[in-house]
Amino acid sequence: MKKVIWVFLFCLAICPLYSQYYLRGEIKDDRGRLLEGVKILLASHGTIPYFSGSSGNFGISLTQASDSITLSMDGYEILTKKPIDARQYQSFVLKMLPSTAQLYKRKLSSATTNLKATSVSLSSVLGESYSNLVENSFIDAGKYPETGFALNVDKASYSNTRRFISNEMKVPADAIRIEEMLNYFSLSKENTTAPKKDFSCTTKLTTCPWDQANRLLFIQVAAPRLNLDSIPPSNLVFLIDISGSMDKPNRLPLLQSAFKMLVDNMRQRDTISVVTYGGGVSIALPPTSGDQKQKIKAVIDSLTASGDTPGENAIRIAYGLTKRSFIPKGNNRVILATDGDFNIGQTSEKELEDMIVGFRQTGIYLTCLGVGMGNYKDSKLETLAKKGNGNFAYIDNLAEAQKVLVTEFTQTMYSVADNAYLKISFDPGTVKEYRLIGFDNIKNAMEDSTSELEGGEIGSGHSVMAIFELSPALKDSLAKQRNLANISLQYKEPKTENTRKQQFAALYDMTRLENADSSYRFAASVAMFGLVLKQSKYTNGYLLEDVLSLARSAANINDMHQQEFLYLIEKAIKIYHPVKQRKRKGENR
Image 1 (cartoon, rainbow, N blue to C red):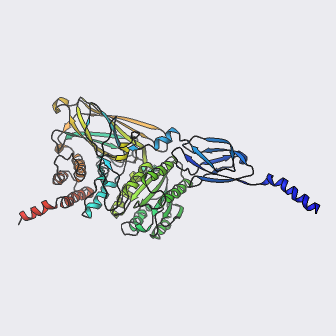
Image 2: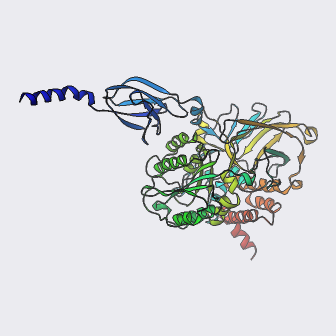
Image 3: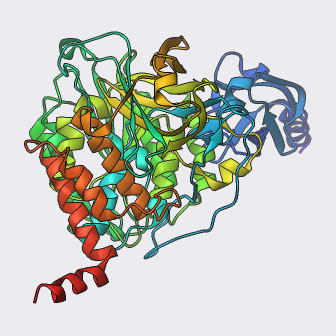
């Protein structure tokens, strides 16, 4: 009996030496966002790392009640705390570095120094969501000579506008982004095959067809072009929405055809993965060489639509998979294809914005492909693309998929410039007022006094056209060959922190629009088409019939996209002016 008692006492004595503690806690940033993937080092565990989970939580077994902890994550200050009590739940806050904090500021598509916004009414249609925009107004060049706007390759607005008109519906005003409509067309006269290292900039000053007292300044910027023989390997993760809302011909089946066309462009050194979400999230295809085309296509063909839409968790898993197969100096990109109708997890634009900014520093780009109608969430996809350092397209038919993923493959998928934007400084001696057409800002970003201009991603060889409407300060004869504006281009080289700048100048050298190259007349017709559809107060009585006349004088008969544009204007006239059409028919009887 005594022996049993001694054994019992001995066990009580040594038990504390081997007792287990469980350190639990959560890690947030100084905005209150839970952080996934924070590296955790404990003094008692030496150099063995642990990481916070998807909800920012962690749990680690310890053999002692207290320890010291060090937390680290790219973009945040290192945090060390000691001692910490393993018997209590811990909550840590990592402070963002200034460069990280900048990413969370609301960003503007265009900006004029010291100018504040005015309010705008809301609009929506058929359950679809669009960011509320504030149209740019005329600015006094004497008070505010400097303005700027972001460059990007986004073209979603044009194909989405085409979808509405093709379905004989009016286009919601906030769905019309004129810069994206101009982006849609190839208006550059440059050699489109020869590689080049620097941006080029061409300007043209013409008369304004809707206001004879004003002038139009066209600024066309063409991006550097990669040598096709030296395009880096790609690590692409197709993130495909297969939820129940995608079970329609113009959604999942359209995307399946689109992705199979993209697969045909892949090489042996490229890597393809497929992540799906619908009812749950699944890795349908682990990283696979691009030369295994039949295997990849078979997986894409096998997809069927059902279930809810856990988009947030799917994005996290897709980025995680991209990181695991990351190609240094390669093109690492998630391609999200969806109608944007997330209904599980974080679903608001603000929540998604905060989440995606956290992934931006990984060096992974995000391309968003939107499809569908009725529940299409344009605003969500626009937010994801911009905050994910990527681009955005809307696919309404197979021909558009061919254009985006095959014909313009390098423009869509290979970035040659990040955070690219132009700043224009007008000479008040020659320009009285100016107005940037398009590049309208989101209402809540304009109302945020901390908002600042954000550049965009530019793909290989892409050409951007922007148009200013100017009120001249002098007669043309007096202003001829005087300085009109100085133009500054700034961007970052991809995958580096190297910032590059280029300077250009625009002289006051006016040409009548009807005598200018047809590309300028066509660009003016595209811009005015958007303004008339938006019912802008700056149309000055210009009608869709006037737009059609201008476009017909410029459209290239051999360019199917420009010819299609003529058809859209004709169809829009019937939708927006049905009374006039009926009157004309009666007059012909």
